[in-house]
Image (cartoon, rainbow, N blue to C red; front, side):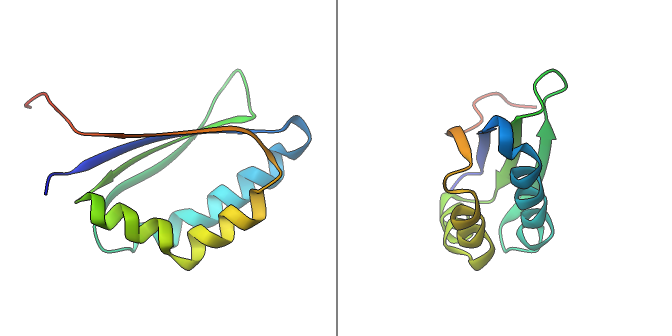
Length: 98
């Protein structure tokens, strides 16, 4: 199976930016240790601090699915449940060659 690239957009509610940021940061170290995680980077928009973007690369869709079942990911989902204004997750396959 081919590599999967994920771009995940998380928009925190205005009064929850720092809490959401803290929860997002907690996921980085354990996720980077997961089987199949090639790249896992978190960004915060310079103009809108409530907007966070994850850029991720996984060896396969199965590896990504395992990540979403992990204890740290499930803890994040529970912690930010009512703190998000919006969330979009794009799962993509690269179609250009280097």
